[in-house]
Image (cartoon, rainbow, N blue to C red; front, top):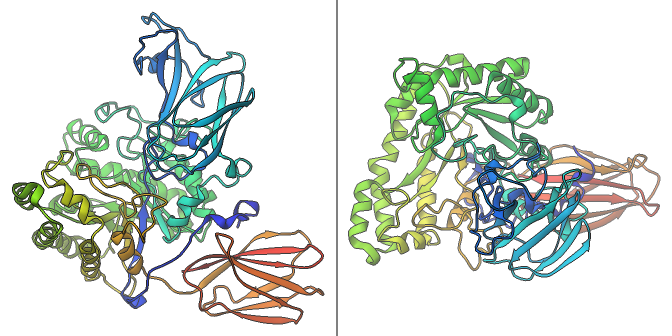
Length: 626
């Protein structure tokens, strides 16, 4: 594993897990989708807040009645890392010089305290919003304080930037992360909740829906993107239309022992697909499992990829829909197969299915070359039928959580269970392909989606209610009936963190990274954890080691109860076992040749075991109990 990047594993899980009531044989392998980043989101995976800033907009220089956005950003000139080549700039047709600005519309997920803003180059920045104590520390460093970031807005403007040495590489950091952000880029508050899961799906991280588009409608372009046009690590923000770089996905997987699920952009050229597969093959640790999917929901007409695949796979070729989109999936999976070659067992090749339209799913799956994919993947959502939505609309503000709950249960008997049973019988069993689920959970939204329903309060209330906990448990019980063989089904929860919204859906199993579930109930989170399959055993790896300090040998690996420690030094050894928040759990010392430590009473999670001597030699091990 890594050396110093994992040394500060105060980052990971405060695994205060709920009581496990189900035997492991009845549990489910549940991972989670993680949200794409935005300037208003409450899921912030990075310590460098610049990576979640809004893409540049523009402002007039010297215009006292200037609009918030002069709408000339697309006409300005930029470096390959996205920073403007200089400020101010002349834009044809605009009477004022132009400058760039970005904003964080909500700082609700930010950590309170002192921040620094660092940048390279020569120029000046200005700020507006809820910060205090703004200070220019030196020409390339500002500091400020967020005493209470909740509901604040922060805007940052580049007022000047020298053409020969322009402002670039802006970093916005809480001072706790000022010296560690390069080696430890992930937000420890986010990791603390995330690492209850063993796998993550990067669909939203990769901006898969409408990938490469500036808006939902700009999909009609036949040009394919080459590998050189992918999202890059040094790009100023990751909220742009190509998402978070693959290197960050791989780092998260490798550093925190996570399996991953990647979605290949629908407009990726063969060069892009081959190089993407090569990057993952060469840099993902061999023990990590990777699932590969072409785009996402290429039958969902809300998304640009569906419209694009329809036009260029069906309309332009004269092939019926959905058969005309199959070659895109086939080509993608074939190229990953070729790149992985004899290592093909390291990946799972997925064909996504539309749960609510089984005929479409059959016509996709049946037209794939059977040997070219490993699993079929519907969703496992449950929600409200159109009839149920109409009934609740009649009740309006008088609708209760019980009203919503009863209609969800009626709806899943009529719709979701029937759909999934059909998919299992006619596709999974028929093709002898196992099922996994790319998304799922509650999908309790109004019809049409995006309109504020008359029963909005009941939709909000059920998200925190005991009825939601019961809904999840009962739904997971049904999902188990779809299992074939001895292995638990693989489910990817949708989604990890997100605020409640009656209009757009309450997707997160947590509402924020800092949610105190003792105060604000999280029934979806609670049920999901309780239904997870876990082995209750540890895996162990060295994460920091003095070159001449191989003090002990530990075995077996993995282990479930006793860790056997063999002293390979001639010195007295001291040991400290701590959780990832730095709290000491156990200390002991020994000089004997062998020493056994009983760790069976530890809950699931990640721990650090530090072995050291009075002479300063140190070994640090990471232990993960799952």
